[in-house]
Image (cartoon, rainbow, N blue to C red; front, side, top):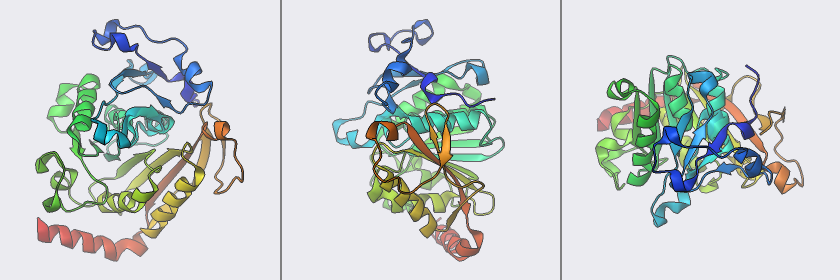
Length: 328
């Protein structure tokens, strides 16, 4: 299937109708055109519903409510759904839907990034779009994780129930877990959720063959922690990472994230990193494009697929496994 322009894939539900029966709601026509007239790279407001046009893949559209976190958690931006997530389906800015999340979802749904039969983890999932798509596309197991705030996790759980069958949830094919990047010892939990709901409690190191990271790169001070979690949970033999981000907070932060990936032993797959815009256009990756037009820059995403360099990281992976066995 040809690449679908991201601007055509998300519609917002009118806020005054959010509490009504979702199937009887009308959608904002041409809402994406209005959103992207100023190159806006996010969809929705806290507590609102958005619709991902996925009927071509699943025979139905997916409906997601955006989180409405407490004031002290607003820095997580969990109430937006970023375009990165549509390609993989998500972002740590869980209060909106960003381009990256939408791009991720598209790549999974179209099988450009195949998850069938794989164990999938999404870090900084936001509304959970890419992960929900992964579950519907035949992943063996999907774990949707975000910052361990009850408001964020309960909203993701509600989105899962809204879009997948009860059997998938009951069989633990799709689950929701809290996780602070870089905090890998459940005994040191200080999160406002139960330890049993933490990713480090329920899942061992190197458990996942696919990890989704959609628009989590804007927090430069968290790059080391994020990459630490990726290395901890990724299967070093068969694992792959899909990393997508927009340039809305600057190109340098994206560059620094991939450099941190190198430092923990991750290497690029295939064609390496590419840049793709919201209309489907593609170009090569460039670390420095000199002075970029701010409006035009926001229309582009960076997409990278990575794996663990087994030669460089074999010893460190064994250390992680041994440490987990000692604390288990």
